[in-house]
Image 1 (cartoon, rainbow over the protein chains, first blue to last red):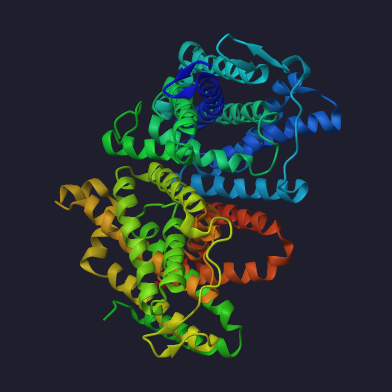
Image 2 (spheres, each protein chain N blue to C red):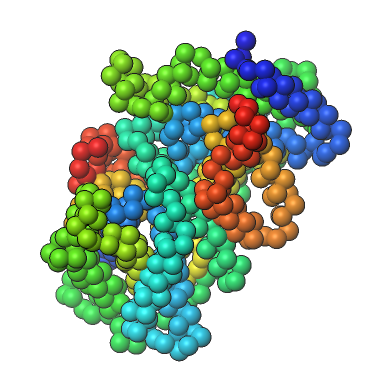
Length: 295
Length: 310
């Protein structure tokens, strides 16, 4: 068996792949957080809860309506996105004139409500979601066996991240969005409907979280707590990357996932804390984050 | 001496009388829980209400204080006063280390960093052998205070807890009304200006943070002694959320708000315990209502109604 640094190669690559998958979730979630923060100046604490709702939505579609994985990949983000749209219109939009901290507190309250309701309805033990038949099994890559579903998650996540980047950086809509992030009143003066832009930005960020939730459903068990355990790590990722650039969030997300995976191989005890340790190092050396603009 | 206005003096005396009479009408253990959480909330208010920095990880200092007090009582058999002081010291040291990192950013980032650092402490507690993992440190003896006051009696314990709470409460009040406290408020209102006046704002923020963490550790240690238990619940993030809620509900930046908030929330939890997971939902709803319609909190609203500074 091939060995790398005293570790069997398949184990190493396996953990790197797992790391990439976690990284995919980090990237999708921190991307959504960054986009929402840019427009709304709010850190969406409910992001983890909405990620969880995405997973539950796909589970419900399968078990109550009989709609399978692939349609759910589009439907769940759409449904949760509409939910986010309603949230923004009815509740969050009342806060824009207040200190940023109130947004954090409000969305924290929303997360508690959403998770509490799901815990009441479904308990906290978690429900399995079967990997779709098409993506069952594994492929021999020569140096390791890759479970097809895991490869699929990484591939799709990368595509969605790139698509989001392209929309924001390369389309007229994205140009308006970036302009409104810089100076909303000015953009409004040019006749752009900024409040609507804000609403759809929030819905879009939420849809990204829900999309990640659907991807996660077959890997993590679908349970009401799946979001919160992830969101604190995602916050650390956001601090490390800084929220200035889209590509920055994506690269940081995947990178930290891989670092976490490698830590599982070489120093298993630290795997839960390594992201936070990286955050400490970044804070000491480059407080504004790797890709952040100056404070 | 403590910078109370006349209404505040009256309110303080009312609180004093209530604390003195309450154990004769209500269950002392419940009251001790309220007082511990009230001290925790007052300590937290020092940061959020007077420096304007939202720390979303105060459970780390509270919980670590609880662990250290519990551990030293159970395995080193130290005096109760030493154990509680060590709880406070733990909060101070941890606050100094993590605060040094966190104050490098402000606003929303400060909240995220403190949360992430607290989560790191949580994972540490989950894995470290001395915390007892999921079981926590159980059956912590209450022991003796100063070698001769036996704390196993609930009433004796109550007077001790009440004294600790009052000492902490007055200390915080003294800090806020000292020249140091005035600078903190100045930083809250306009940090660049404070810098331009020559204040090293980072130092001020860090000192305030350490003070807040010390008192949080003290509150956690006292709680561990009262209930004889220190668990992961004390150090996990819902506890951080709870203390934010207490302060928000009672009134941000008010003197009596955090105590009031702790009282309301603890009473609520006491009566709602049988509803299980609904408690989380109700807490979440209170959070949202407070932020949307009730930002001054109970004490803030009462003060506003009668034009008093409470």
